[in-house]
Length: 214
Image 1 (cartoon, helix red, strand yellow):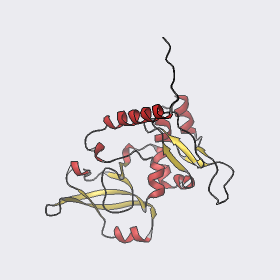
Image 2: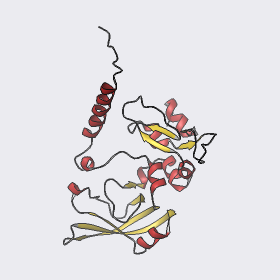
Image 3: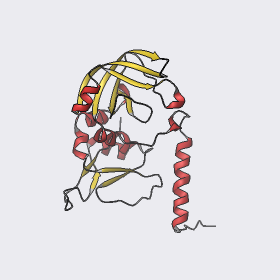
Image 4: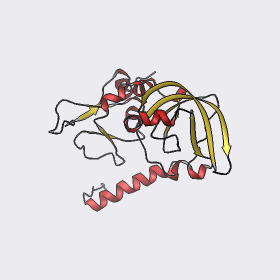
């Protein structure tokens, strides 16, 4: 018997919720505590600072229930005046408990960090620099900046409508997640925002799409 697609909007909404729930159930308990998927470009564009930092040491403040990481900033890609003041002592603060979305960082490791505050957790963009693709590294170094007028919208159903000035993004799709940047196409709206955006067809992105990555 052939499957018949039901276009009822309530059915579509239910399907989207089920797909989203299925995605969240694949997360570990600590990751599931609060985090919603965020593309690296969105993290860059929304951040007050974007840096690559080495973890120097870890201290635990039992009275406050937090871990304090002393960091050494190796690269600075984005930094507004407020963030500069916050980071002048070279510290990151995170809940000590995993259940409170605390981060466990490794001493001497390099991390790429894009955040609004020195208080970070599992929802913050904090990634091991060695585990990022060359496209993500270049993106944080400046390529993502070109796409900040665009909006990257998580899409869990695989059949989301494309809205003005945005790119749809399915979080578990490798090419857009690890090799993609969303940039404006030609044409703007009256307020100067882009009318259309698309995934930049860089060589690495194209190789990923073609299945020819080494």
